[in-house]
View 1: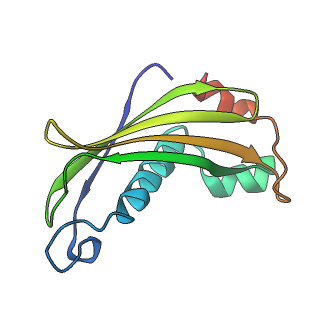
View 2: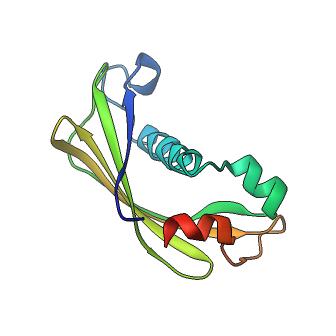
Length: 131
């Protein structure tokens, strides 16, 4: 994947604590939404990958750095870029920004597995987009 994928979202009341600051675990939800939209942009979906290719994409590891707090009604952009890949996994760098200000940095390692959880080769239809 040669270019970055941008996903935009707005912070709602449900995303925040009583002080109007995004609760730390919600950043993981934001990152997941951006990764799902990235898959949709390929013309695929997690449902289609499971049904047609017996493939699930699971998170193997997540390294996240919180730089600045996001707050109620902030408009955020999540920039996702595939950093590297192997036969059964790929790594995505994701940056959450408010305008040009970096809020959070994450490195997510994803693995393709079958229904039983056994690692499998990334389906060619997906590999074509991430290579």
